Image (cartoon, rainbow, N blue to C red):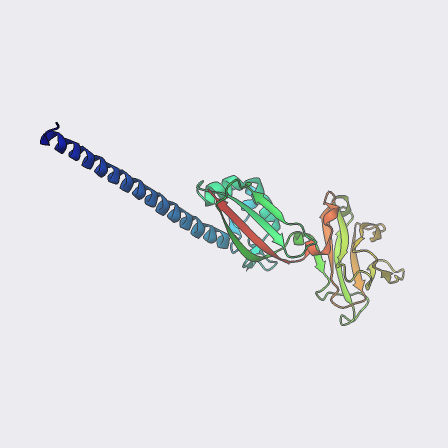
Length: 289
């Protein structure tokens, strides 16, 4: 028979096992809770940082001013208008495309300190314009996304004249009933650039136009605008001169037309009026571990 000493040894062993089990469960629970707290804190920090980065990108043009040409500096996507003023809540298409070339270095490494992966997308409200996405492709289920409504300019930098604004006319057309403007061009410009009138689709069949120059005395007649883009290179008469002042007239006030000068290799599929005006877009920044 087992004596009292043997019974006590068994009891002590059982108690110790139970105590060790409780300690083990407690430590595991504590580790799980700690891990959850750490992950929750990391997620909150990521969300705060992402929101701050988005707001900074769309409200600052970046440093230095030409950071997108140098491929270094602090990126900013905000548009600077003709008067040198920053347009708040805006995204410059050309800056966004430049950022694509050094995205990991300037965004993931510099802005997010290599802690996260990310991507950006510019989604126009107009269906005639394609969205643009840059950055990494996500393979994570834990994605945090920040959306902002912004102004976006796409190819507006190529616009020479917007006929919704009043301009000068060499035929004394009353701007209450017409849209007129002019530009100066050199023969050499035609070697590298193509000039177009881009018309908003809803207006193209209602408009008539005249293209003439100050040096041409031949009378010009109104032509019907039957296309949403009118090629101008072959409509400009230089004669023996090296330059010309070209006047363009429309038979409606504040016509939805822009005059653009684009490089010869410009994608002709994107010669659409909507690409050359300021648009409403959604800017999306996605971040994940």
